[in-house]
Length: 361
Ligand code: NAD
Image 1 (spheres, helix red, strand yellow):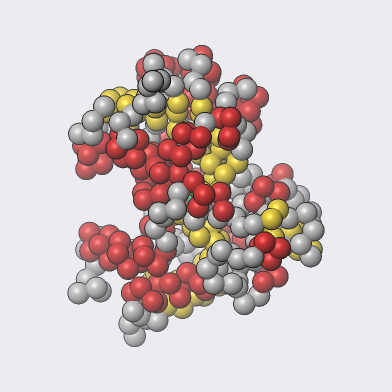
Image 2 (cartoon, helix red, strand yellow):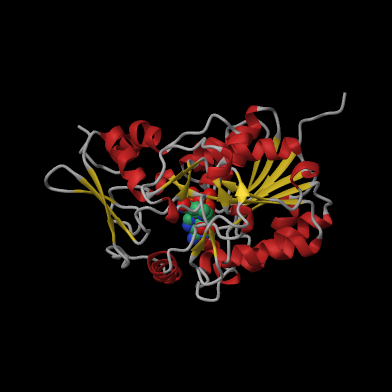
C-alpha cells in the first residue's frame, strides 16, 4: 500500500493559519518541517512538542539556506507569509523557487486579492496586493498550486482598542462595533485557528488533480456587519450595535504599513462598498440555487452573493454570477467549522479574560 503520510513545509508556523495546519496534519500522522521567527513562546513550544514536527528558527528574508532546508524532503507545502517579516514579495518568490527546485507536488499559497485589477476606481490594498503578486509568480512558475483566500478571522474581534474589529463595551452595558464596512454588505468570516487546518488538509488529500490553479475562499460564513452584531448579541447576552463609520479611528500605535492599509480600507470599503473578495470566482447568485446560508440581508441588492458588479463598481442584476454561495467550497472541504456565534459564546470570553478584561465576570 502506498504511504499516504506526507511531509509538509510551512513558514510563520506560530501564526494562526500555519499553526492550525500543523495541529491538523500531525493529528493524522504527517511530518512537518516549519520555520518560526522565534522558538520561544506558548505556540512555538506547543508545536515543538507535537509528533514529527521539526522547527527551524530564523528570518526568511535573504535566507536561502533556511528556505532550502525547510523544503528538504517534503512533498507538499502550505505557505502564508507575514508583513512583519519584511518584503513579502521577495520572501514569497524565494519560497516558490525553492519549492519548484524540490519538485513539491502541491503548493498551497495563502493569497489575497488586488482589487485594482477589477475596477479602476478601487485602490490596491498594500498588504494584500503583495500576496497577489506572489500568486501570479507561482502561476508563472508552473508549480502545482492552489490559492486559498482567508476570510476575516473571528478572533480579530477584541474589546482592546485596536482599529477595525474593536467591540467597544459601553458604559450602559451595550457593545458597539464601528467600522467602514457597509452595514448590509456581506463579509466572509473564518475561524482561522479552528478551521484553516482541516480545510487545507482536505485540499492536500484531494491533491492538484482536483484543485490545481483554483482560488478557494476560506470562509465558512458570509455575514453582514448587522448579522455579526446579532450573533454577538445572542452569544454574549448584551445589546450590540453596528455603526458604519467611513473613518477608522486609530487609538494605539500601529506599524506605518498597517496605517496605510487602514487608510486604503476606508476608501475601498467605506467609499466604494467593494466586495471583500472581488472577481468572477467569488461572485455568486444564491437565489438561483436556493439558500444554505444563514440569515439573509435586509437589502439583498448589496449582498455580494446576490449580485455582480459592473466595472464602475455598481451592481447589475445577477448577470455572470456563479451558482451557489461563497461559502460552498470551504464547507464542502470541512463541515465542522466554528461560526461566529459559537466563537463569541465559547472563545471570545476566554480571550478577553486572557487580556485582563472582567466584563464577563
Ligand atoms: P498571526 O497574525 O496569527 O501571527 C503573526 C506571526 O508573526 C506570529 O507567529 C509572530 O510570532 C510573528 N511575528 C511577530 N513579530 C514578528 C517579526 N518582527 N517578524 C516576523 N514575524 C513576527 O499570523 P497569521 O494570521 O497566520 O498570518 C498573518 C497573515 O495573514 C497576514 O499577512 C495577514 O494579512 C493575513 N490575513 C489575515 C486575516 C485576518 O483577518 N487577520 C485575514 C486574511 C489574511
